[in-house]
Length: 288
Image 1 (cartoon, rainbow, N blue to C red):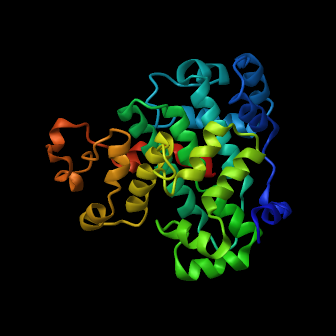
Image 2 (tube, one colour; image 1 turned 90 degrees about the vertical axis):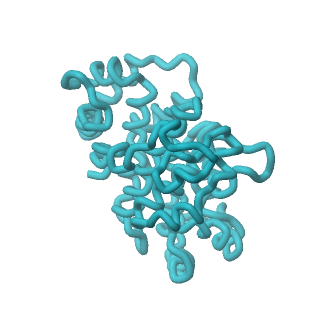
């Protein structure tokens, strides 16, 4: 099954709410009317309620209660509010996916998004972009499982959907990977290339050159999320550490106690990455 035939299946391209479509379009616009977006969001009571719950969550540590969309925009900024609304829309688009543990999948995705945002700030990269790509980089797995359940089931028998070698196996068997499906879905939903291109390159950000900094960052965040999702120990962290990705973007991976021996410097000289459960605290509102 080609990517084209995959997306010819109706379930491969689920609809998202109108306000989410508007916000996705805003990625490519420089003349975004924030008041217009706020008004549009307020017409969707479910998304408004989720956005306000997220804005008041432990993730943001706001100093006072956020009670309106205008408050959220003022205190969190347009880019972050857009991330939250788009994230809720994407999560809600896939309510049931055969053969995939959705709670585990979205927990991994939230961990990746939270970790990517923290890493982007440490690496002086675009934290809002990192969050968006981190949250949505693996949605191609949802498309594959929904539109090609038999093929996905056979792949699952050999390799877990979130395993690091999954993309290579998919390319061998299908001719493309879930990362390419993620990018294609993003383009069909009208995300800009700055979101779709890193999605495509997350499995191997170094090839072809030059390196994709955002893809490398997400690759590292996804590795860290995978360790947390599967409760991996220090030995696995050391043996699977994508240090080459960190070197490529000038980010020394010494921010975990398990990696203190890497990079030749003490952990105390670098900011320690908080637990992912803390970095993603409160974001699980997106899942309900």
